[in-house]
Amino acid sequence: MFFASIGLQVDVIAHFDIVLVLIVLLIASIGKIPGSIVASRMMGFKKRESLAIGFGMNARGRYDTPYEDLCGLSGGTQQHGKILV
Image (cartoon, rainbow, N blue to C red):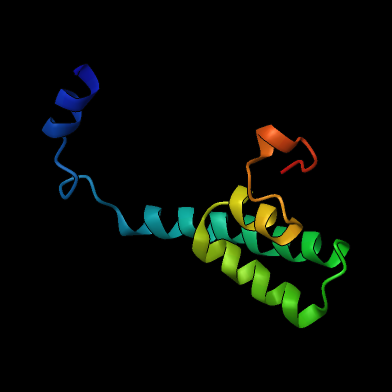
């Protein structure tokens, strides 16, 4: 309840900084896209497929579910323990 009440009192528009948002998005993309490309290349995907996976992972924003789907482990990482993300 405490965090909900504090969150309702925050004026997001007054504290919005587009430069900060763009910097965070750029840093996040720089980490996700090349990392996903390298990982998918190591898994044996072709260059074009690796690019698609890299940009798809960036749009998704998560790593666990798509890699599990690619490896056939759609049940979750904790249950199988075969994939480390």
